[in-house]
Image (cartoon, rainbow, N blue to C red; front, side):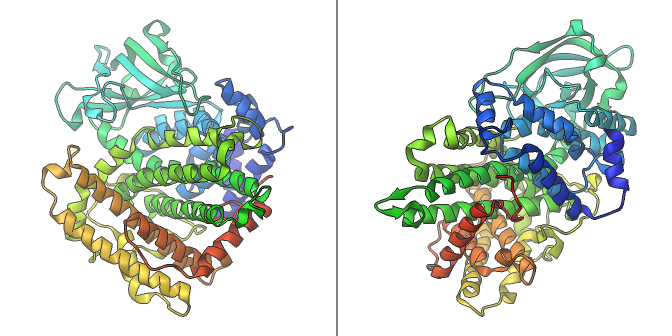
Length: 585
């Protein structure tokens, strides 16, 4: 598999975009029509596996045959990982069928492996690449139930041994694939001193652990992602060699925060696949139903709900896009963008699913049949807002940076490069060493400010965009004033609710900046829908209302254009994201 993946990279260079399109098409062909009742990896069979609390064996076999783990391995190590945004697109195709399969098969390995790509030795990187490219799994263990996201209080120890290595001692809980992994990335206490330098990350291979000194804890039952194998590890002074250390001793927190910038940016965008399926399921229901003598599609509330759900996917994809591309283009700014993506995108998508459930009505509760996949995605999607860093932890990452951004960046910084907003353009390699833990610059918000004076106003939709952009710029000014007034305590994890509310407002403004940037770059391009100001005006209008504003009504053409596109993409089997991708079934 290593040679196969490498051959795909060193052959004729057709470009990252062409490779991504081909890979998405390959996955769609392999999984087939998910609505086909005879498909062994269709929704019906995936629901059966979920009811049994198992991952789909057929689904895992397909991913094995596709060499799916190569998506998480950098090209220079024989894999396919070139761009974080294209990785998100590829994995999205698995998530649209089953979030648990996407997480349980490979995304957990991605969360673990970025630590090694960022700071591991050459030998560690080669070893990990070999494990993944041969179909193995890797787990990451950050948390301990007693301490949640408060990593520096973790008690699991890696004590120096007389032989020069470490002795692993203690428990790690709620680890995906703990019992199936060939290796683990363990966030471990290596010093009893207080502070962030007390922890390190170790890469531990299962084959090198004395089985008498390791116990895999019983599996946890879960409400969502039932098929994922969540358990834990209990080490009893298990010796590991010194070369297990990833990076330098005492750099565990720093390495974790750098790795989070990649995973927080990418994983929420993968979840759009599940939201796409939810919207598609409800559109299919509306197409085939009548209410009060009318097609459900023509009932104003249902029509509006479907259109705004589509908008939510476009907004979420726009923010996810800039988050993943910023890792390549703006590594010194990514800490705040990644946290905004991880906080806001799952929140929006979860709310979207609730709104869609109202249109679906009583069928929302059905666990089988043509609508059964909806309730599965409703249960599974919120898990992504927890994972390795919950919503509050992401807001807590943003809050301390707001005063510095308010003083040094907002209304002063240069706008982000155009490439940040281009879904299909190539990117430079990731510079892991430049991923900063905090930033004093925000060129994404600067792009919103810079755009205000350059926006066209030739039609009602464009004039609506300009008016909304002015409102949003004024909101940024208010956020700036509030950030400058934050007390020292309100810049910590013990911040007041108003500080968390401020982080929420800022995340929404980043989403608005992303939407505006994507639309501006799409004008004059090949995608007629993204070039149309109707969707951008509607998206900015929705975000302004999310901020509590009461903007003027949109031109009626905006809702009609969204409705047409919702129906077209359903009829032509195209994805409800920025890429308008052909789908199986």
